[in-house]
Length: 377
Image (cartoon, rainbow, N blue to C red; front, side, top):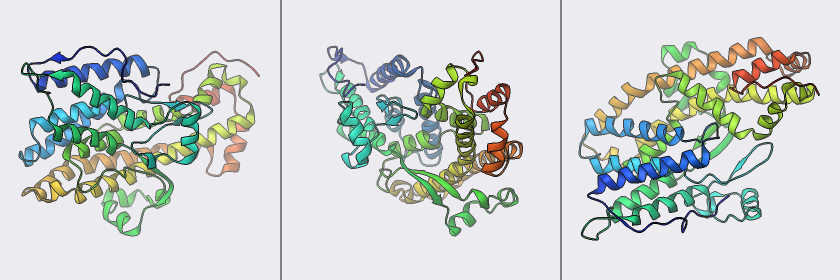
């Protein structure tokens, strides 16, 4: 647990030839740090910022092709720096489920989380500490003339991009009729009968605003929606599995002791939570499609572009079918499990009470948990 990475192993300032060299060095710094500090995590390991960088650049380059004045090479470099560093500090409180110490502004952190942070000697949220570390890296790199490699406007954009990744959660948000009809009225999604998935988890980004830069829009998009925007459903499925495993630290420990040590009552609870999570992947993806388009439609820079219509058409062509495919495949996955384990909580409780160790491990496999030698309780 670290309150700040500042002041640790600070080398002298580094003279670089240009901004590109500084960006490459910053990328390497955060790559190495993520691997060293978080390689054991199931989701926020060194692969996560790489995915965010890749998806954010993909998004920005679509805009760049339509309007080169909207996205410059400096914009792309800013995206690289913010994506690499946005989760560089991941302080948590450990327990059955981890509690992440999220927050960029003080008002981001609810009282119960603030109390846990105080117990752990932490006063700043993870997004703020990550941004602080990036800001420190800016100051390390100077040109041969002694001037800093990054101008104030770019620095502000990159810090604001990290702030924009801060998530807000509503676990029982219902998609309004207007949004449901607008975004899920294609023959493919209409036929899928998505009505039962309209209420569930909505994860938004309150600091992603109309006045946000393209850097912030791209990094926030890559962070929260990167996998659900993918043209490969496995990216989305595996990311959801990894997030579940990372959050459920207590379950990890119990499985390491052997599935046979997990009581029937515990299995019923675990199984219910797993199936809720798999179902939530459908609603999460539906909300992300809506929030993606809200972020595009409200962005002042896109709205002010002479190519706004072309930009939105290009984004729709590139991403809408990916959203829909991932939503439908997530739905198919949940309904396959629902058919197997039962639709009602009573049916599932009965199924899991009688389940063998091998059968329980099969469900754990569905969420990507490793197998350990069987032990009996």
